[in-house]
Image (cartoon, rainbow, N blue to C red; front, side):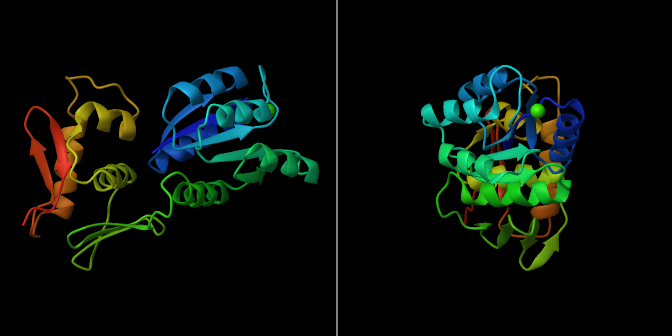
Length: 225
Ligand code: CA
């Protein structure tokens, strides 16, 4: 899942980016409102986090631009000002949530996850399933045949992507951009390594095997009896 952060305070921006990356997200950070809007309109994000006071154009204008372009990604505002007028203005413009600075990162992460569950894919279940494998988006847990499986943040993000697009062959380039925020480089085997580790965890000792390699194309998660 990809998140856009527009925040001009270097310290806050870096802290947010780092925390979100550690939580398994792919993050683009910019300090300028105009750059933020440009990114929001040209890249595919699952969510945007906007500061209000920004160089270029302010957070409100970024939000307006996003909504005018018909983009319905959830938008979370960060603001030092907690006046009622600000909240009302933001909600009228189509913001989905607010967080007043200073905030605890755990609080931000909880809001982000709630918005991602609510946003976009309407009435999405909190559970993703394939055969007897279950991924719980809310509790960040994975079970297979009732057995708890521990995954790293990246493995979780990778499995989430495979499950969301079940039955679809996902090219390495797509996996690279969605899970690692890198452009596919044929020299790197980071994806193969991660797939291998994920397979050991979710397929070893279980039937049917869920993750398949499609030679020369990519990977697919599907249930084949
Ligand atoms: Ca600011």
